[in-house]
Length: 351
Image 1 (spheres, helix red, strand yellow):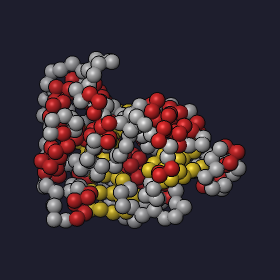
Image 2: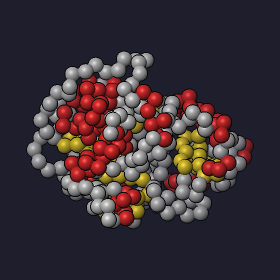
Image 3: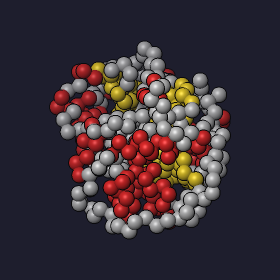
C-alpha cells in the first residue's frame, strides 16, 4: 500500500462540542537546574516545564502506577479497551485498521519516506488543525541536526523542516503553554512518543481546544542527552560528523544515514555505504552485536529502558516499523512502515 501527499487526508473528524477551557492546577514549573519529580526516570517530556506540573502525579508515565494507567486510558481515548483475545491487538494495541504504507515520492529530509510529515502537512493545509506540535532540529548542519527542538508549526514549510528522527529526549509538552495562550489555535495535531502522549491525555481537557488529534510514533531507546548522542555516534560510526540519522533496524543492524556525497564513499570514511550517488544519502550498517560497549554506557535514557509503551497505545494514529518487511539491502527511505488507526480521529485513507 502506498500513500502520496496528495491523497493523505483525515476522513473522520472529532465529534462533539468544544472542550471547556479549564485552568490547570496552579503550580510552578520546575526551576532550571532542579530535579524533576520522576528524577532519574524522567523522560523530559516537557509537562513539568509548564503549570501543568500540577497534574504530574496522575500524568507521568514514570510515577505511581505509571504505564499501568494505559489499560483504563485506552478505553477513554478510543472508546473501548484492547481485545486481549486478538493477537494483533496484544502487540499493536486498539485499532480499526492496520496497513503497510510508504510514500510514492519520499519527502526530502525524512528519516523514512515521510509518512508522518505528509499526514501533518495535510492536516494543516486542509484546515483540519490550526497548528502542529512536532520536533525540529537545533541546527541545520553539524552534530546538532539530530538534537531536538520542539516546534509549534503553523505552516507546511515548518513541518517539512521538522522531518527526520531526533533520537534524543525532547520536551515537546513545554509548548502546551503557548497553545493554551493562543486563541487562534482551536484544533491541534500533536506528534509524539508514548510517554509524551500519556501525559498529554491526562491534561487534554484543560487545553481549551475544540479538537485534539494525536499522531504517534514508535519509540525505543532514546539517547539521554546531546552529549550522550555524540559519544554514541563517535563509537558507532566511522564518520560521526556527517551522520544525519540512525535507526536500529529489523536486520539487527544500526543503519546510519549520512549527508549526500561523492560516489567514493570510502574517502568519507563510510566503507559500509554502497558507492552509488544516485540514491542520494550514504549509509553504513553496523551489526548490533558488534557495537562497542564503551559507546553504549550511560547513553540510553533510564526512562526508555523502563518503558513498556513502544506501540504508543494512546495515540489516535501511529506510524512505525515494528514487524514491517525489510528487503535485503533496502534503505530506510525505500522501506515500508505500518500505520495503525486506533479510532475515528485517526482515520486516514491508505489508497
